[in-house]
Every structure is written in structure tokens, then in C-alpha cells.
Image (cartoon, rainbow, N blue to C red):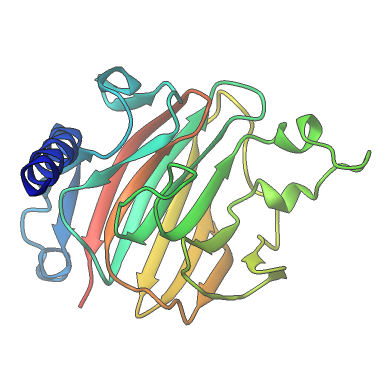
Length: 232
């Protein structure tokens, strides 16, 4: 019996190790000191690690990451981060497309195939029209950069919609157009700028260190110009 359990454990461990394989390098990490000193601003590549999607879910084409949206799951950064600024640009190609990025995550999928952490939502504008509830259309703020803790992570929302924080202004563009997020993460506080204006945030996150994840959730999405600036 012990031998059987040992062999089963080895098989499970092998499965986890094969899933957590390096996929590609994309984007760059820049130290704050480089920016302050005016040194060469070229950063080091960000390496992305498979968590629980498939090899064909993600591909790099030119200056973009293309995610097919299938199956549901994430990839993660190779490194863990605590205080940082994340610049990321994204666009959906399908009406009502769903995706997001997780910060301060352990990158360990839960029952819904997604990890813990704090999610910064990336929904295409038509999501509200395609997901009416009791004949009512959800508020457009739901698609526009909502921020919320998942997997047991608690936060205090700046602009409460239940446990989530909604954006105070809709600045998101529709499918086929690029959106720019600046996500500032410092000591359990997150502030989100969408297309040039800060519109949302949370504070007092019960987790404030971990991986950055990109989400695959049922629809094709493209990412580009991913940049991480590490802060003290």
C-alpha cells in the first residue's frame, strides 16, 4: 500500500512539474533605480510559466501575446513581486470577451481553475448586454476594470459593489481597440489607471506578494507592451 501511494505521489508530482514549464519571454522588468539614475532603460525579459492551460492556448506573434481563451486557466510570471507598477495593454476580439490579470497570486488553481490573488478585470463592453440578469443589464462599471480579491483574499474596495471595487468612470474601449492599464501595487493597496486616468482601487489586501498571472477565460484576447517596474 505504501509503495502504491509513493508511486501515485510521484505521478502527481510529475504532472505538476510538467504543467509548470517555461513558455516564452515577453515584456520587460525595469528597476526603479535605473529610471531615477537615467541609466540605459532597457530592462530584463519577463519569463512566463505554464500553470494549467495548454501549449496552444498562448502564442507570441510579433509584439503581441495572443491567448485563445481555451481552456480556462492562467500563466504566471517566473518571479514573485510585492511593490511594483504593471503597465499592460490588451484588446478583446469577441463580443463580451472575458479575461483579466491577477496580482499577488500563488498561481495555484482552485476548483474554478483560477488562482487566488487580486484580479483586475478585463471584460469586453458587450459583456453586460450578453449577460442580463432577471431581464436587467448589469452596470457597465462591472466590465471596466473591477478589482476584487479571489481565493480567500480580502480587500477594502475604494468604490464598493459588494466585495468588489468598481470604476468611477467608464474609459474602456470596445473589441478590436487597445486598452492601457497602469496597475500600481504597493503594501496591499492597488490603484488602477485606464487609458490615462485613475478610476479604481482597493486597499488592505490580506495578501500583498506573489506572481502576476494572465488569464484565459473563454475568448481570444491580445496583450502587448507588458512592463513591470519594481518599487521599494
